Image 1: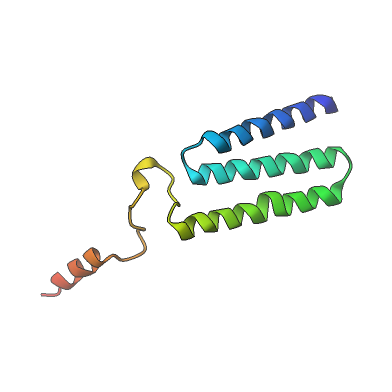
Image 2: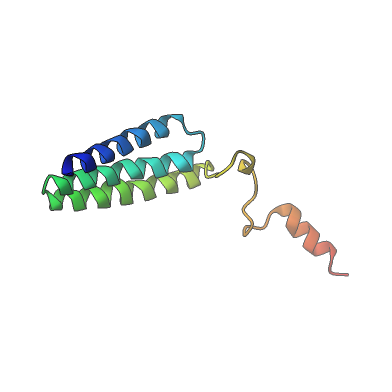
Length: 106
């Protein structure tokens, strides 16, 4: 039974690793990278190394995923769909929307 669980986890990790290479969206690639880290931590638990598993889950899936996501946001590559590139954030006012507000003060 344990062998089948390990096989499923390894296949999931391999599919996620290939998905990182072929996905167009950088956000989805970061999520797939985190799945690889979580799968590795599950394998460490199965190998009875809980301390290594906790470290891998915290660093491999948690911290590195957050750092990669923040880097994407900083570089302006944070988009979910193809049409989202270059779209303004709905909470950040742009110069065009600020000018429209000034015209309505009559």
